[in-house]
Amino acid sequence: MSESSPSSRTSRRGLLKLAGGAAGLGLLGATGARFAPAFAEEVKPLATRTPIKIAWSQTAVCHSPISVALERGFFDQYNLDVEPVSFTGSTDQFLQAIATGHADGGIGMALRWLKPLEQGFDVGLAVGTHGGCMRLLTTKGGGITDLADLKGKKVAVSDQASPIRNFFAIRLAEIGVDPDKDVEWLQYPADLFAEALKKGEVHAVAGDDPHAWLQREKDDLLEIGTNLDDEYLNSTCCVLGLRGSLIREQPDVAAALTRAVVEAQAWTAANPDESARIFAPHIPSGIPAETVSAILREHTHGHHSTGEALRRDVELFVRKLQAINVIRPSTNVEAFAAKVVPDVLI
Image 1 (tube, rainbow, N blue to C red):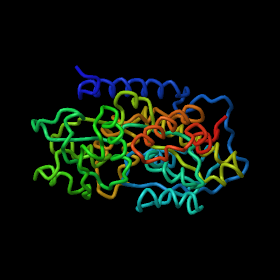
Image 2: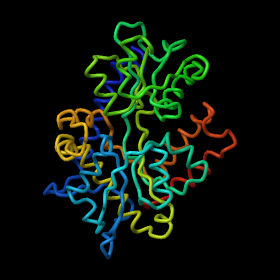
Image 3: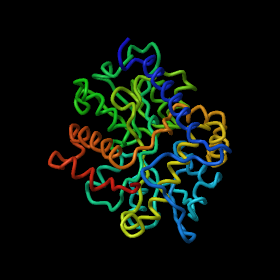
Image 4: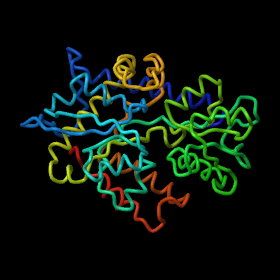
């Protein structure tokens, strides 16, 4: 069996679920009332009630810990008065909203944000929130069983600069397939992926959850790649970004907000069914809680890298993005990671 075969990916996802659940359960107190991941220093509640705006997307299942933190009181226990700001624009605009102070923080895909951060956006990455929401899908019996089979083929993506496109371009380059010359990336709205695949206009689709998960299940598609494969098993895909001025001028607030999100992530990992119940009403498309729970179980919400661990994730992705000509080759990887990943939690 190959390292990247569907069976090995399923096995790794299963191990992650068990590990994440066990770690999460270990964080429960005697009453089960509070999760407290271990850090070098305790983060104390703020002295005064502090208003904070968090931008989030109600269509992104991986943002469900925000709703968990609101309903279960993870923000309240640090004296944070959090206002969730629903954001429906592009992820570039999402990052700009944080950088310009229209929001104090938000969760987004690292592979989307690293290029703007290289260009100077004033946002610090506080914590990696999870992995596992990118998928590369194809029809069963179509002759494509792994990434190498995509040479000379067409792949649908939502946009040419999407983090999903970049991630699978990285994976192709790693196995000697030129992602620019050997694969044709065609842009479609995500809602038309299934139709393009059925008509034979593309041979595979690269998307993110919940859409990719739903399409895989509905059309019985073969999953030939995810962002939990191989060396990416323990890396993050999404990150909590905070405005730079908040980190510099109110480090106690930044630490409290980050700690609350980490605890909500841990609770989500250990309680996917209840987390899904909390988040499902926010999804405009009306995805049932049972489906949200199934998606959450395939993510790694028990993963929350901060500080040096998150810098290693960023360094990994920056080097990979340099290899596919997204990040400038002249960018100093270590210096860049040190700049964009401050030690919010000491």
